[in-house]
Amino acid sequence: MQESRQWILRRRGFWSRKVRLLSPGPSHIARILSDAIAYRDDLLQRQDACVRVVAGAADDGPGLIVDRFGRLVVCSDYNPAGQGEALIAALEAAFPGRSILLRWRGKEGDQALRLRWGGIPAPEQILAVEDGLRFEIGTDPRHDFGLFLDGRMARSRVRALAGGGLVLNLFSYTCGFGVAARAGGARDVVNVDPERRYLSWGRRNAALNGTDFRVVPDTAQAFLRRCRRRAQRGAAEHFDVVVADPPAFGVGRGDDRVLRKFWPELLESVAVLEPAHAVLLCNDKAHRGYEDFEATVQAALGDAYDVTAVHHGREILGREPARRDPWYDPPRVLHARRK
Ligand SMILES: C[S@@+](CC[C@H](N)C(=O)[O-])C[C@H]1O[C@@H](n2cnc3c(N)ncnc32)[C@H](O)[C@@H]1O
Image (tube, rainbow, N blue to C red):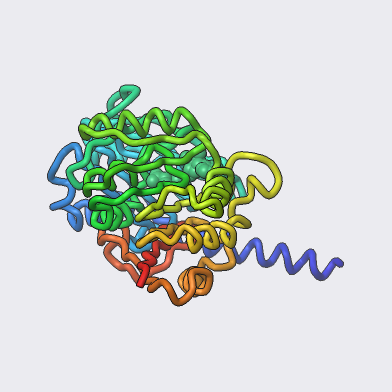
């Protein structure tokens, strides 16, 4: 007992030393920011562009993610031994004339992020642009900001596949995939999310791009079960493209909340719906298939589908893509194409 306690203490010491070594000091932070900005210079030219500016260890800042949503800059420092509030000065110098929100992990083991605003005061909403599409960006961190920038290549893939088709967007949040699909010529999109406020936000995003689509305030589980019952009666709508981007934990209780347990049923439902394309994102590190996500999806969808990875853009991969970040991974994105 005594021995295992000593082992735990030694292990804790090892990790806090390792974390300190990984944590960059203030002048190093200024250099990380200027190198990362120079690397993405072309993407940042448009002042209202949404761009991931720092991508953690790949940009020499383990745990440090900086996203610019036009006039809003959000810096999240997941490294428990990071600089905390001291980062604000470097961020204000790197992003003059913008609103800056810093979120950082208080101390080792603290899951909730602390917040501090800097730069110019933030309005309630901001309009920003990704690949020519306009999005309403929120400034209330409780609801995130309306667009997950590490979904950019997945949105672009959906846009390329959507032409003329009916698209199902599960876990739609503010309907970023729906907007991309309509821009790619989708005849309609059905966006499913239990949070009505996100669906209204999604319809405002559609309007900003001169379009509209359907929204369904429901869970993906309930929606798919209904679809499958209708399919058995031969009365289901046929979706040409299905997009699923589930969080690890969703709304509801028990198994309904633990969405990582829903993957087998989700994939079985995709197989039953037989879309020409499915674009699937895995954000969940604890999911058994995070490393073997591709094999899991291929096995569930069977020989009828070819499954390939969708690679992130260089702004998400950072300057040294081979360097894995101990605290952050972008989602794994797969495209399943019906043969
Ligand atoms: C990872 S985000 C999805 C991001 C989104 N696909 C995008 O493009 O930005 C999680 C979303 O899943 C929704 N959600 C949570 N539980 C859900 C469920 N059981 N069914 C459908 N959506 C759910 C949340 O309300 C939230 O909007």
